[in-house]
Image 1 (tube, helix red, strand yellow):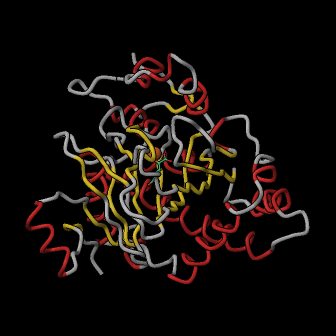
Image 2 (cartoon, protein in one colour):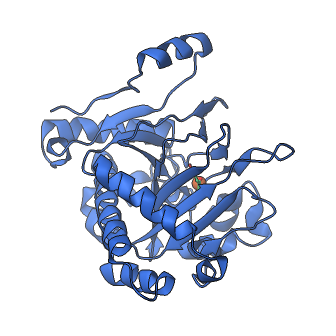
Image 3 (cartoon, protein in one colour):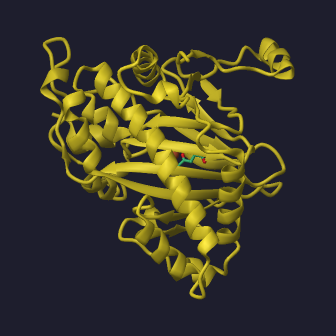
Length: 328
Ligand SMILES: O=C(O)CCC(=O)C(=O)O
Ligand SMILES: [Fe+2]
């Protein structure tokens, strides 16, 4: 089956709404099992589609049936139970980088609460997180979250490998992949009170290589285009948003743009997002093949975790934090 990049498939009702609002959409790429086989013609065309989407929007919607509806439902139920644990239990999830652990009760983001599970594609790591939250055990939580993280990681690996190949630098992919670290986080947004702002997360780019987002069918994510328009992302149940972060922008020497995005709460239902956030453990150096006369080197060797820490400082809050940290 061919990879298809197209305007997102719209329902009958959506088409009518779209016609009246003329709202732009993210490209949709189908990651079917067959199309994820390197070397096939559909793989090759998908490489170009992924590159085009990441260069233009910094993100796209992936349809990815390997995560079944049952698994998706089970994951949202599991993180729902996690979020219902007593605050003192959740606070035990501390990490040396702020948002890798428990985040909540933040006056700047009052609607949002979040929990990170570090190294979530390792069974041992998910097991030790589970033991911390449920000292008497919760095998169902552990198995569900671990399976989910592994499957979403495959999507992340395929998308980044496609991009490497489309830039003809596939030879660097394995060492890049070996140094990738995966953080799984749930993010929960409560419905704002009448007097409160509906801003869930202010406009930002992620500090990641790639972020993969999945939601509980309550929308709210918005992505800004190069033309300064906001796209309200509506993703169907089997879809994931694949988004480039600052680290991927560095690796690509500014060819890929990190997607500017925010979350606005609109309805009267709480929102859950689950994200797989990948970061590079070593130093990222721009492949020499991506440096050219018309695109000279833009970044010094880049320490992804150093940058994460930098963005938590006052200097790192500036709009041009990436250039300040690593620009040449
Ligand atoms: O909840 C979402 O859709 C996006 C969350 C987000 O942008 C983040 O956690 O960095
Ligand atoms: Fe984000």
